[in-house]
Length: 239
Image (tube, rainbow, N blue to C red; front, side):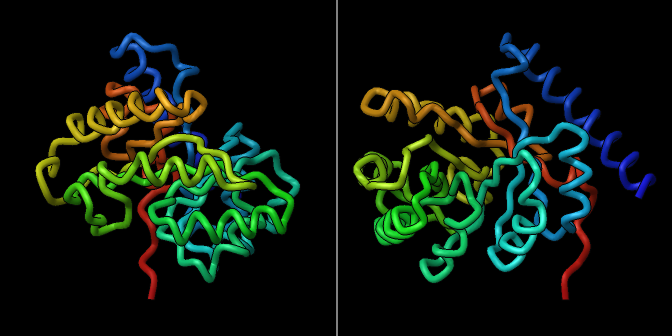
């Protein structure tokens, strides 16, 4: 365990250095960017070490892994983010532990989240996932609503009991006009965030950037970066 703690501490220090450097290059204060460590496929013991090392935000993308991990780590001062595509039959479980759902991309999901948040007497922060590989009215390959659908969906979230419209999220697209153009993609997300905040000033979270492109996200103005591999190492193969 000591070896693993040393490994995670070293990796965290390198990621922190990257974020600090990106903030400095962009003329931003370091505290403008929050690190979310994506702990999917890794055990609760790693989450516990990360918490001891000062991490306060962790993310998961599969409920079957996240629910048990969150329960095991319920004594820790952590905010849990759900970042994967979410099926409505998993919503009750996810609402039980997630402080934020970053992958809100359709009206039916908003309705289900609201119902379960009210039942559980919780407030869940919701980020609209924006698909920059989609047309104006389509959905993306990895989930997400097209830019043209953000305003309507955001209004639905904002008006739903138990939910709080927190901001926008995207994943750098692999296809379409922004493929291989992470800076431009994240810049487009920031433009959408500016538009959103005119109607919903408190929806100021912008979640973008991962291990390979966090610098581009910080340069564009992201408030949260989601880093997995750079902190935890190459993920083990499943199956």
